[in-house]
Image (cartoon, rainbow, N blue to C red; front, side, top):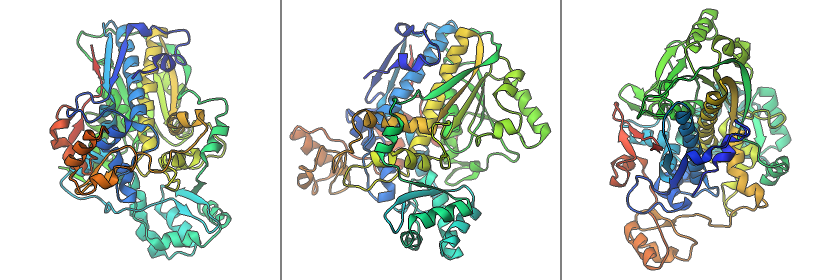
Length: 544
């Protein structure tokens, strides 16, 4: 397996391609033992993706996209860019290693942390959730971050306020739980009305609504090919590089300010921390409310730890002029400013790229956005709306399942990986030009990357049963096709895997309980407890 490093570097440093200085190696299992992760389907099964993706359906389910290997490719490219930054700073790094298994574990790290905590979830992990269907057969997603807007939308459809209110928490927390057991009566209210009426109600009440876009429509929009996953523009001011001490990580000594929420920007900053940067989170007065989101490790949210461990924090009120001055003072000592605020918010508060580069010449100003201006009149820039708008909800399901976005935060996570990739590329550009820059990655770029193979091969959906695990007497295992289903259904999972091996078919058990992974000897070198006792996925890179 290889990583297209030239493609990663080219848009940032036209004409710069010293790729031979650094070699990238990606294997399947990395530090995982047991010889079970050997391809995309076994990576999804063993490392927990099938379990999380299948929560809303009540059983493990394989993805029709190559999610695990795409994550590994992005992280490998990030590692190579980081190694080139290190070389520009005087290090002698020549080799970067990562693996598909390590990359896949990172994509489910927040779910694993939550499953391993002692207390329960904020809502039950009961199967269910969007999308919704209209009377005339339109499948669609809705989204809002405001519970009052949510309630008004459903009341406009004739739903009782109490019914709408009871559905808000599972709907709100589906980003964290990967499932949402909404009342059946809620679905009944949409299926009784034509889509035009539902769309009108959404526009009146402020809910964002989006029909599930056919994959072929997105292919038409991408007729000129998949765009680069980020854009980069120069900023004024010069930067002077500092040399690395020997035997240190590539971004050692660099300071990243992160003003992020949910997954995309916090995960990007977490990866920069794993590469050696000192990350300072910009949190509102009183601290990030998500620190207290159950389940907990002591006084800290398990999910929050998965994305933010080892970061420092500064409480800043950006709505107050004094708070904005405080933020500018922090920027004066930073190398990177990273945020995922709503479009225009940074400029509204005088915290845009031109404003902050004037404070810190040579700053890398990074924005992880929703749509990056790639489509007109986009819906709300959230994970499931992007999946709906780009056809990803169709690509991830085989032909025997109706199209539906995954309730695993696919593009939020992939957007975080791309965000780190873009920042490290911008830092490399700065090392070679002495110039700061602004760089933008996006959720839609993450979705387009996952759709690249579909767009290039005619958008055909995967066949029925594609990557569907087989039920055993006590669980599930992977297999190609259903012809072995009868042979394994009365066997234990371990015996089923052995029987399939005897038949010449490689198989692996499907991990159904993420809480068991940190205690599984196969994962001992990849998952270790942090200072809170919370399982932490270790850095996916090694440098030599």
